[in-house]
Image (tube, rainbow, N blue to C red):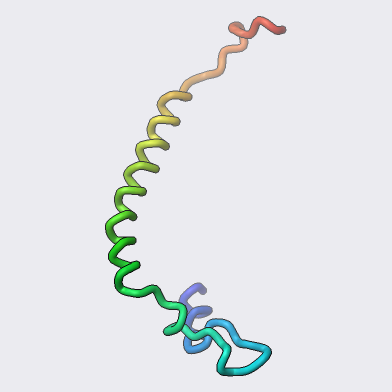
Length: 73
């Protein structure tokens, strides 16, 4: 469904109500090669950091919750 929707709006992603030349096309909004190179470098680093954080949190807070430890009851 996502590919069909993208194909349906392909040349013009966002139509302008003021003038057709103000519409945003896929070529106008595409990322440049330099920003894609930065993303290729930082994406794996961010992915590893977020995965390590999720593993840390799931191991740190794993296990059953004990009600007998509660002193306020």
